[in-house]
Length: 466
Ligand code: SF4
Picture 1 (cartoon, rainbow, N blue to C red):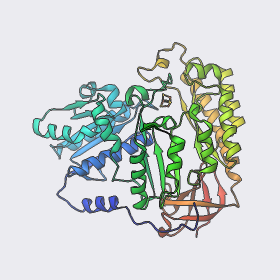
Picture 2: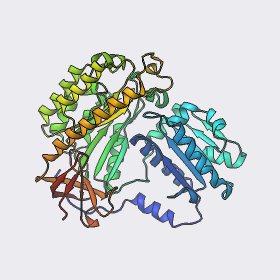
Picture 3: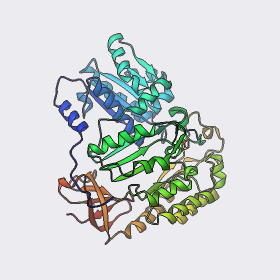
Picture 4: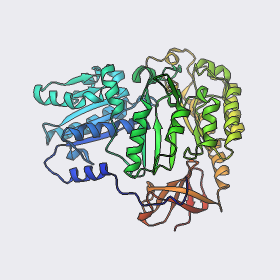
């Protein structure tokens, strides 16, 4: 990767196509409302791609749509209220657009199934995360038969097709996501993913590379390899065995590609070959997201995480030995059933010892079907809230201390676009995944530039404009 490889990327062909489609008024509109994680954002891009192949165009407001799809998530939080109140808002649009189809898809749809039609009579369609390939056909059936459609069961014959759908509708002209695997076999006791996303399935490395090459030829500079348990990636073909480390190495050198990241990993999969990639593969960014969930061995065992805190320190030390500048972020849950003050103190101790660049912290909330939801020692809401507030405050201090060290330094960033918080500014990221906001001209979007950091905050840096 070289800062000399600077160019202003052409807007991707996909974006041009969608723009042209937006200017063609007779096409029916599809509006997708996405809840949740990056996997869901990526699924929504695939939904828009499939729908555009069937003659629909993406629209930016629900009022313009003849199909409204809510792509839901039930992994982190209780989505019921959010989803049902969104359906309630969209229901009113049916008065002006009687043919309007409203559908709910994703993990929450898979979890609730047909029952959703009873709870939200305005719904026409319920589809699971593995039924996206069937979506155009289901919408056609609704139009022809005037009957609601429900498909939430996993159909393996659709899956291969699903993994192969390369989204043509991208949210950015600089960065893109590429699915390399789906599902999860780990069965952490708090997590609903294995129940709603199914067993692990992997994608052919040849197809992955082709998609990465296609995206980088369109001007994409950074790729995020995606999977629910992405580090478990494996593929066997003609006597050859692939894992994530080999896949990463195979993508180094793709013309025009400057940066590669992956998410979400499972700590036990951090074997030496993968750790070595952070030191040896130039395009792999100096950032790893390494969820630890708890610092207490007692709670880790109850979570079925299959690792101890000492093992976790071993992975962190191994990564820092091979790549001293690496930034480490993680997920942590407080208030898991049976978590006592001593367990929480061990979590805080782990945080103090590792000193994460940032943490995604959550209060435990029971997910249906999961073993942890059946545990009797549920923690009071008050205790969960107190522990979370304490942890988040301390983490903000640590993040700020770490970020302060960037003040006065020069950082190479990939400029991704306008800042979400302040559209007057541009935003880019360092290889360590730190957001840098700065004032600069639009033509820098898509370029790798060196920028001087003048101010550090806990969640972002401010750079000196060019
Ligand atoms: S590894 Fe991640 S996705 Fe899989 S069960 Fe555990 S928390 Fe859920």
